[in-house]
Length: 104
Image 1 (tube, one colour):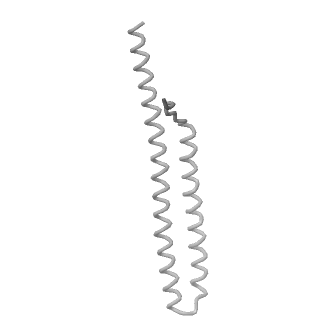
Image 2 (tube, rainbow, N blue to C red; image 1 turned 90 degrees about the vertical axis):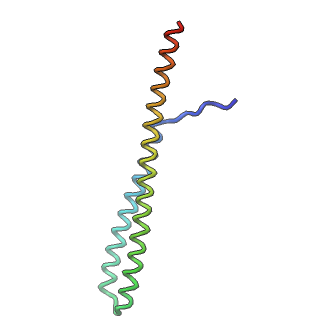
Image 3 (cartoon, helix red, strand yellow; image 1 turned 30 degrees about the horizontal axis):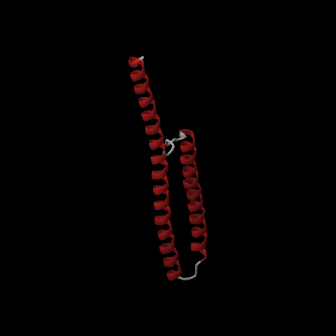
C-alpha cells in the first residue's frame, strides 16, 4: 500500500515565491537590455542597423513578456493549490472529527 500524499503548504508558498523572484530577475534583466539597446541605437551608423536592432529588441520583449506571464501563472497556481489543499484538509479533518464524535 502506498503512503498517503502529504503537502507542505509552507513549502509550496516558498516555491511560489521562487517563481516570483525569477520573474522579478527577468524583468530587471529586460530593463538592462532596454538600456543597452538605447545606448546602442545612438551609436549605430546606418538606418538598417537601427531597424534590425529594434526588431531584435521587439522579439526579446515579446519572449520576456511571455516568460513573465507563465512564471506568474505558475506562482498563482501554486498559491491557489496550497490554499485549496489546506482548506480541503481542514474540512476533511472536521468531518472525521464530527463523525467520530457521533460514534463515540
